[in-house]
Length: 97
Image (cartoon, rainbow, N blue to C red):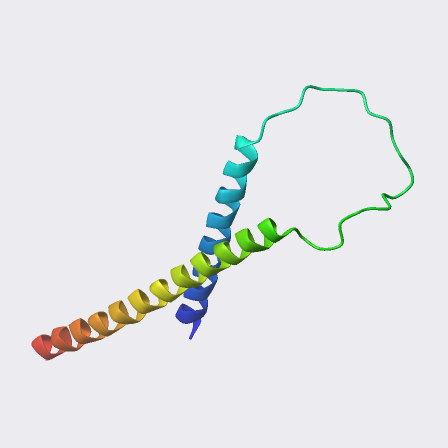
């Protein structure tokens, strides 16, 4: 059971790592503005966005879909290898005994 938990945690971290790399690449591609002196406005913005834009939602949806596919593939490979190792151990035990 702990191996399965470890595999799930590893796959989750992998998905988050891929998403982090993608967002870091996007941030690297954005132009850097020249340093300018700005004024501080203590009042909150009246027209602050309350929901993410449709582009952001679509991008998030795409990242989650890719992450879900990656986790599914990881689980399939994990169980395939688990069966292979079980078969190999059984054959090895039969040869020894």
